[in-house]
Image (cartoon, rainbow, N blue to C red; front, side, top):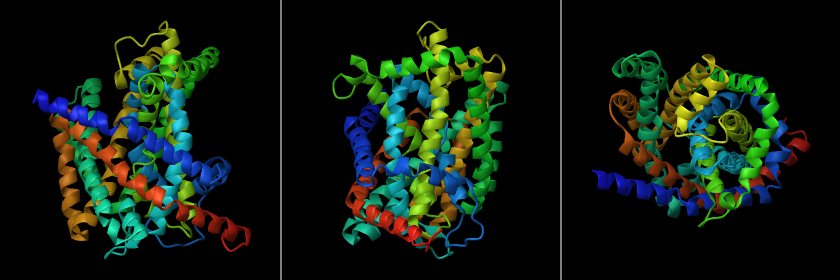
Length: 452
């Protein structure tokens, strides 16, 4: 078993190695250039589309722009924003945060492109619901000869959902609640399974409704808690920023074998957190009510901004301040334990509770979002008749995840999660002209007054 685990770790390291990271960032840079730095120019407009309701405009789709974004963010804003940032900073130094920011800024172009294609090539299933994502825009955009690539993406997505989406997240919730409140894992598992079943068995509209409540509340609580710590230690904020930037450009940070430590871990954790280029979020984007693919693509793009530039930055700054407080050392802790310690040290009693609250609700929202991703991938492979059986199996793995050790499951999920990116990135590069064409069409039609 130890040899098998070591083999899986090697495979995971290869999948998430420099070639994939360079391809992910390179695709984002390429899209940034051909779109004329759209993510910077259009961000104010995109945020307006996200948070201002347009109820007078009724368009095809299952959920609102905001609902689609919250569904995507429910799967994206997760334990990576708490544990992932800490892991990156311990392994790559405080400078890893800077490279997370860089990754997010170019990743916004990737998220824009993949969401645009998801809406453009979406289809309607037998129930009248929207179905879309990389598997659809690969087959419909590139042609039947590329269907094998679409099948590969759907297969990887289905398998990844049972790991990173349900069982691993449930395990995190059970561990956190047991550690903080002493409630047994099977009791947590039973409650979590019931809460999950009530929501996911209702489909995308139910998931979007739940996500539209859970995601904003959990994000606001976590952000406000982090901001209180930052304001209380405002004298160290400038030093924290200087530490992050200086450490990002040391010889060790940017040098080394293929990628320096700060670059490697910052890019890897940044991509793992915001999922730009992995092809997951476009599945939710395809369900949005919208009059043009570009409009929803702009809304989806803000997800990367909110996830990494906002939420991950809060964690990064608090950890940098804690690092300075601790005499430029993170000690022996890492992951969520380190974030919890620093929040609690810098905001006694309350800080640790905020992190625990964030972990539980971030993980639960990830369970909801990934159920939708997984069911759409499964439906593509086996037909819509498999949706209900998938939801039942998915819900069952939530209970399983709370009571078993999941080291191997996590590694499997990590591998399949990374493999999802390859078909998606190939399609993005091959369909990049379509992305540019649709963008130009939207801009022209807005100028003419045809679109609002």
